[in-house]
Length: 267
Image 1 (tube, rainbow, N blue to C red):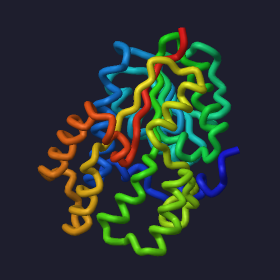
Image 2 (tube, rainbow, N blue to C red):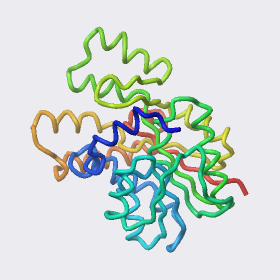
Image 3 (tube, rainbow, N blue to C red):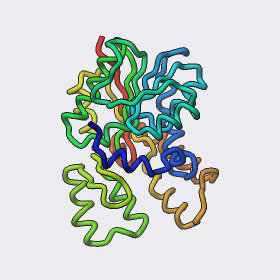
Image 4 (tube, rainbow, N blue to C red):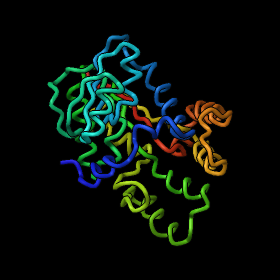
């Protein structure tokens, strides 16, 4: 069963707007698209979008000519995805997929992993992706960087001694976030931890890149200071270029807000 706190949070939160209406959201969306699209097989591929939310990524995949089936535990998201992305939908759990073995060319988990707070559940979800993917099929999964909370609070001048030595130190030490400030319970990954979980689940040819790059927090700070969306600003273009440069340097991978794991199902 999906944690009730998580489903309750998304029943109220406007996830459909998150990647469209802010500069940091657009950065996450454009870079996710940029990193995944070159790895996809030629259309029409069968794609399973696990935890696909309101269909933000399913839409562009369908527009590219792919056949997309979206799974999510939140009824509101399923309704939105069916209308917005024009994909098929199913209520479900990343840890127990109903799809048969070897049935999809691509499996995406761009939301579930950070909502699974135990390592066993995250490995189980990744293993389910391996199971339903065809041999050699692409698997792409996102995680929230363990260091993102520290960066976010710092650039917004909210890092009080109490937060630093309490909430932030706890996340840095073990990755567990209690959902106390505007989010829900979650696990924040390091890139090495995400790689380890992927290997344990049986993925091959694994790689982890930072999605937004190291400039995302400054973009968020600029947007907050301006008091208006900056999704058409040159600052967004600069952040994308910075992220592309950072792809070549593993030392700054964890400076992104989100991490993208890519790998293949075993042959």
